[in-house]
Structures are given as structure tokens and as C-alpha cells.
Image (cartoon, rainbow over all chains, first blue to last red):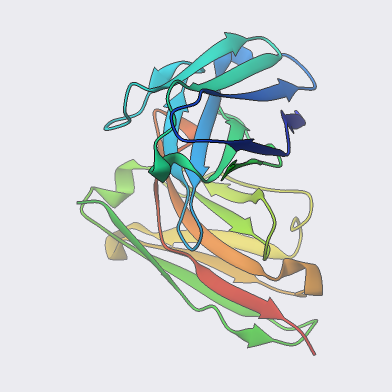
Length: 109
Length: 119
């Protein structure tokens, strides 16, 4: 099973700043089957990015994903107040298990 | 509009059983693979189980293997999770999650149902 490690655990930034979140895999993620989700308190997660860099439907272009192999990054170019939440990376594909990282909490500084 | 509505969550004693349901609407249920994903209070996401669109294939996470059974009724557009031998560590919100593009990519989530295992 692929283990995903996210860093940092908590990121404190101000609106307008750029956020960079990291996700490292214990082994290479096949076909870049790496997704990012955003979760706000009391809500279900929302898909942001899949295929490491493809924005999901309706996701603003300030969200971007990059990386391949074992290192992936989610970048939020200019933070809006509504962006503060917990973010999870996930490796997916066609064969379970589909593991998640432990999450990065993005909080307002 | 895609809708997934979970139900069946409750307070149950350790060693007990519970059956969760997920009612789907707004799409052709029989065409989609579905996952159960859970989240313990204040913790991260954990993939629990997967079922193929026809129901012929199912997979489980190591923590629930041998205790949980996933099933579906395509005629009723419904998904189920039978949970036996429940443990305190099974306490979580359980989400029904529809796959898209590949088996494990989740584009649509339900709102979840809370299972509490406690004496």
C-alpha cells in the first residue's frame, strides 16, 4: 500500500498570500493518479485536482497541482478567505486500496 | 444533480452490528463504482471499501476486512455497508462516495452518517 505524507501539518498564511502544500508518496504513484481534496468544517470533502494537475469542474484557476512520481504539490496562488480549510492528497486508480495523506490544515494568520 | 444520502448511523456497543445505506439519485447508479470512506472525529480520511458497478467485485481496507461487507442493489439505486464486530476505533462519519474516471477518484460525496461505537 502506498503511504502518503503531507507537509506541513499546519500552514498559517494571510489572504492574498501564496500557499504551497506538499504530498510525498512512499512509492511512485502510477500514471500520476494523485488527487487533492479540500474539506471545510462540517462538510464533505470537495475534489480540487486529479491526475496531479487537472482542475476539477468549477475549481478556480488559483488552484494548481504539479508533480510526478513520488512528490506532488498543490499551490494556491492568491489565498481568498474561503480557501482556508484542510487539504488531503489521495492516490487513486483502478485497484484498491486508495490511500489518503493525513491532511494539511491551512489557517488564517 | 447527483445526490448521495447516507443513513443508518447510530450508537452501538462494541461487538455489535450496524447496516449503513446510501440512496443515490440524479445519475445512472448501475454505471458507477462506489466507495465507502470514513473519518474519525477530528481525524483524516480513510478509505474503507469499494464495489464495482455490477457488484461483482469488492475490496476492503485492512482495518475492516472480514468484519464489513459492501453490497448494492442497482434496481433500488442503493448501496449498503454491513458492519459486524464493531470496535471503538470504527467510530467515524461514513461517506458514500461515487467514483469517476477511475475506481478510486471521488467527484461526488454524500453528507455522511455518524457511527459511534461505545459502551
